[in-house]
Length: 121
Image (cartoon, rainbow, N blue to C red):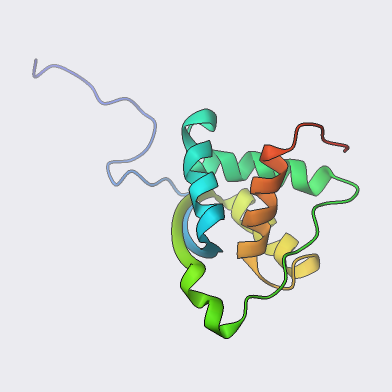
């Protein structure tokens, strides 16, 4: 039993140099949908990765949600995710270009894309 070797995937800290741990502020419904999509795609980060890759290839991505009002902050939660650096950068770039500098709206758009039945790229 003592003569086993650890698999070479990720270091002992469980984070590789290509993984970014970050938090996003999203509404409760989006957080629930990401949590439900996690087992389907392997993890929540992988679901966001697939959603962003489809999102950057779409001609007409989903429209951004309206800005939440100050009294509606109770419906927002912070979600922690482990994302690859490329996915993290794509989320930031999409937020800057199309979603009013709000990465939470990009995550919500990813959920919309993952739930679509037919996607026109």
